[in-house]
Image (cartoon, rainbow, N blue to C red; front, top):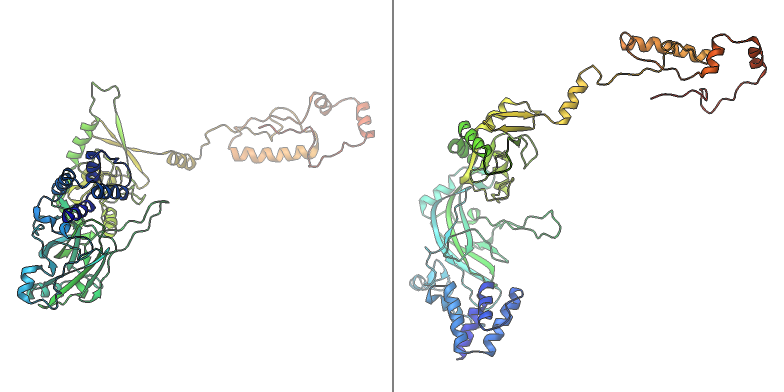
Length: 497
């Protein structure tokens, strides 16, 4: 009974959150909380209520996740008890062939053909040097070391040695190490285990680090891509040993070694330009289908605006590209998109954030023609219902056109010429200034198109200016001069706007 209890507890430690919730719910326990809470609750349940029904439920959940019966080998081993595997250096060749698969302890529960890795656009697999093989924990420690060995044939070594260099230290033909989850359902993406470190022939090799996040509260993301181990290999028929250090936190991982050819973003763009271009006629048909009148819809769309600025780099698109499965017509620049995924592979559409694998990318033929026919100042166009298009000029462009034209948009009101309305200024200096201003204004306006209003005189001064009585003149001479204000103009002089 003690062995079955230990076996059940080890099975529970490998459960996922859904498995833990199912187990707890079947026994009438709460299934809310984080995974660590669920694991602790399930372990206490197994320890306190070790009934045949509970052990049966645990075994059924474990079999549903790991269908092979022999997969219980890791779970049957009591925690804290290590299995004494012979070391690679001391094991005979015959014994190694029976107990090891390329240096990793062999388990009949994980055949190499079960795990399939996803194909990557920048890597073309030439040969498989080591099929996907599961990493096995040797003890209960959180940090584990797993070894694998493989050999290159002479032709493979020559192929790597004689390949061209994409850049200094990086060859076009490489030997890469790939790590993924051990799951036979579907294809698996590259996924690093925690605390990963890779040592090739007793030398540590570079593993891609974390990308810093610009958003507050978002943890840095680590790009999981193939690890290039070529510079540390023996490019001969000698045996190469790879040691993977990984964190054992309940998840299962598998490793594989492939001989690949690495493509650059320029080479991928050449493939895209050669194999995936949608004709302009097909693009027009797509626009007509999208803008076709639907009698059941209450809203009729007569046009669809599309920007000629790439959403990735905020520059004019050079080569318009989009994803076939996306519903929008907005394009992005193919060259920038491939360059960004070469450095940080996300393969996400920058317009709608959906998956954008390389196989579904296409170059828009109609958008390519529009970019050639329009001026660089045009940043937006509108597709019409018949498949045609027209440029959209923004307000800035209209304002620039008004500035380039010499004709004013509004009439000019000139208030500096006193002769126009038949009045004279109150002082001679003002009169002279007004006359000189009138001459310059008339010359500048080219023919005197302005209207002048003189607000410097009231009705009484107007009569005096036209020639009043002599008594008024004498009184004005005896009276003191009016005080000037802070500024050099009459108090009653008002400027009309």
